[in-house]
Image (cartoon, rainbow, N blue to C red):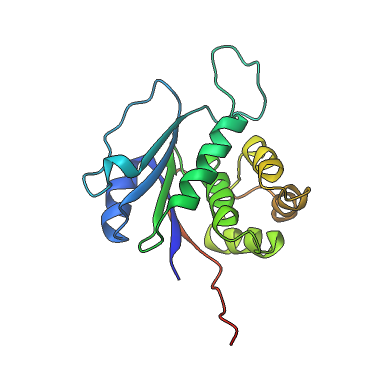
Length: 177
């Protein structure tokens, strides 16, 4: 069983090395620049330009879109899962936890949404998944409102300073004989 590591931007190099990650999804505002950690393969780094907002039409800010979510789903499905997937945003609290839920469901569609949301909350008391990403992810993944309801059920996370990376374990598959 592997996992998804969720991190703020300031700690991506440390988390990539500590968890032996070689694949990464970055959810950053278009104007923010950063360096990809050397241990992350260039061809296995997905950079998505979006702001941490929950609705479109906010000046020059870019709201999460269906194309962003489809890119997360496609990237997650192509992740070889031999090592953890690193997902980060600026603070590691909103966009990246939402993307982690989407990625987890992309690789394990049989996962129970409520169990996954509770696992997220157990891993991070601070995570407050971006509602727009969650809503679009729910639709793209055909969850029929279950993901949205599960995230609502865990509520808003505690106030955070953006320095609390966490590990979201993936569902362990049980082989039936």
